[in-house]
Image 1 (cartoon, rainbow, N blue to C red):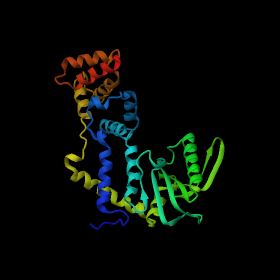
Image 2 (cartoon, one colour):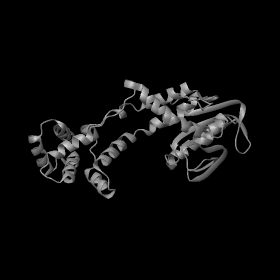
Image 3 (cartoon, rainbow, N blue to C red):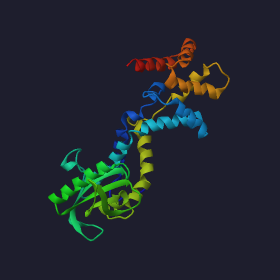
Image 4 (cartoon, one colour):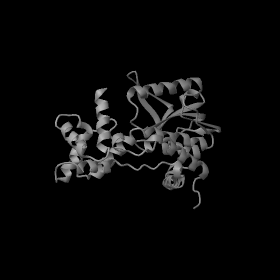
Length: 299
C-alpha cells in the first residue's frame, strides 16, 4: 500500500504511533479483581447502570475498566498530538518546561500568513486536547503568557490549538482576564485541522493523517510482539467465580452480590457473607480482595 502523507514519512509516523502506545505504560497491564477495585468501585452505581441501561455484566465490567484506563490516557493522546510536529518541516517541539513552555514552535523564513493578511515568521503554540479543558483562570494565564510573548517579539503570533474544537476555525481569541474582555489579532484560537493546514500547506492534511492512523496502530500492535502489551483482563471471570459461591439460583442476584462485595465486604451483613464464601472458596480470588479491603480500611 502506497504512503499517502507527504508531510511525514511512514517510518516516522509508525515510530511516533509506537512511542504513543509505549506511553500508555502500566495502563495496558491486565486488570484482575484487586486492581479493578484498587480505588474501590461504587457497586450501587454499577448495578443502577446495568439495570437502567439494560446492559450485560460483561458490558458494565468492561466499561468500568475502560473508564479507569481512560482517566489517565488523555495525557498520552496529548503526547501524540504535540510530538508529531517534530517530524514536520519548520516545526520544533521543545522539551517540557523549556523555551517558554510552548508545546510547538513554528518558524518559517519565508513568512506565515495569518487569516487577516498579517505575515509573521514565528508562531508559538499552546496545545489543548479539548476546547473545554481550561477554566477561566487557566485561560487567563495562558492569554497573559501570549501577550507577554508578543511584547518580546512583534514578529510572531500565538495560537491556542485545540485537538477537539467546537468547529474548524482560525479566529481571534476573545477571553476574559481579571474580569475584562480581551482579544488581539495575533492571539488566535485554532482547531487542529487548521493548524495542520498551516504547517503543511495542505488543506486536508489532518483528515489524511486520520485515515492512515487506524491501519498504522493495528500494524504496530500486530508486529509489536512482547514490546506492545495487550491487556487480558480477568475481572469478569473472577466475579463469576465469586457469584457461583452465592447461596442463590438467581444468577443476576449472585453477580450483584459479587459486585457488592467489591465495595462492601467489610460492612455488616456483607462481611458475614464474604466470610462464609471464604470458608468455601477453593482459590484465593476473593481472599485477595478481602484481605486488600481490610488493609485499606485499617489505614
